[in-house]
Length: 249
Image (cartoon, rainbow, N blue to C red; front, top):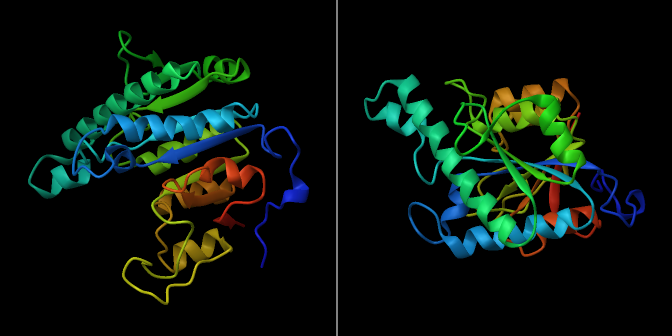
């Protein structure tokens, strides 16, 4: 089956999408390091975002915090879960600020919008203000998850995508789509061209957590899973030449 988005369905100004959500993990920012931020990697990803922004596409961005602190890991080591989750939210703010710096060094105006109030470094989340930033072609980086413990940044990305009226969620990973098994461990792993939300949930496919998938299904938000390590991977989906998996109804 062909991908749901074909070259014929795209225009010459950034594809059929006017506004999209890009979700990437915190681990994507650490490059080959085992921890923290790797500035050349942050800059490379910023250039990927710039290439799509230059097409006129309005971009929302959510970055995880697992390269600095992951709430579930802290909880597993005996830390109280709510405190651990709040620490993870603060890690996402650090990543958001790093990406803001990289994007603005390329001339792409951004706003970091935090679900936890910290006026000195980020704007508070106000939906109508965020939409106005997007209309002015600023990249909106949504930080601190939903502002609540027990919710992942996958869920935060799906929630913000719904609130911002995004037309699709682009999930950047280390592989070029959704597979029936881990392609790093199984040579016979099969990549799906398209897969339904229900199949993702029933087969426990590693796309997003169940809450995020359920929310995307409810709001009919397609999810494009692609490799963030592939140069031009984000932009190539918009011109119909990329390799990716579409999660649809």
